[in-house]
Length: 120
Image (cartoon, rainbow, N blue to C red; front, side, top):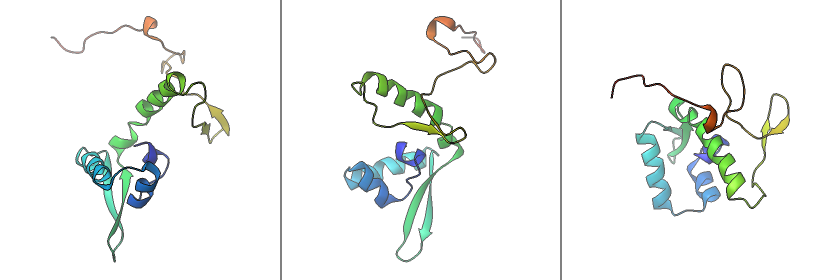
């Protein structure tokens, strides 16, 4: 998923970037396409070659991906995150945060509550 968010779409590029066995990559791509997260598209007819593009469902995973990346940067990187994210609109590096879509304050678990939308 990470590689597709960063524009890597072709099987050989994915294989090179990830450095995993072909059977594992093939299985993962198959699962992601079966779940409707990626779509397999022909980009060359002879020999047949395919690329994998994010569907709307896949693109919608971006927020969760960034949240997991932020967590890993904080707790697993030893203070040296492997990637810097840059917001193209303002051309600045950023650290993603979870905010309320109404008041735009950063959220944390102590500030949140819930109500059920259905009966248990």
